[in-house]
Length: 178
Image (cartoon, rainbow, N blue to C red; front, side, top):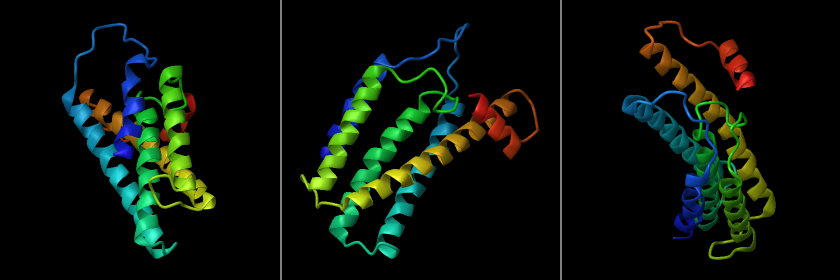
């Protein structure tokens, strides 16, 4: 229930988010939406199972602390995923999130971290482990953003009849240019 409530606050502020309008009418492309959603969804599942495996096999956490760690991972990872899916560009490129969305994300992250650090409603995690979960999620955010870019690039090339595949050099250049 706590995860659902903390996730709902940023979702409610999406309507206020900044976006750049297209100069011409946009035709909805369900295939592109579906493909990007599947790719990013599978990465999010891999992210969660990867942290679970690390918690069990490397950190040797008990069940209660694994649950708290995964609660934090789902909260942090979900909000970071929200920030990177708002645009097909790199997450750090303009338009930047609205102050309403950013405030909601930061506020719920602070509350979630405090819940996990002080043991409010969940078994407490050591602060260094909370920081480790954050670093893990930030690394995954960069990976997911790169995969998002490649996915959009491949879909757009197929739609335009192009057959070349994006290489790593193109990925780095595109990410630098936003």
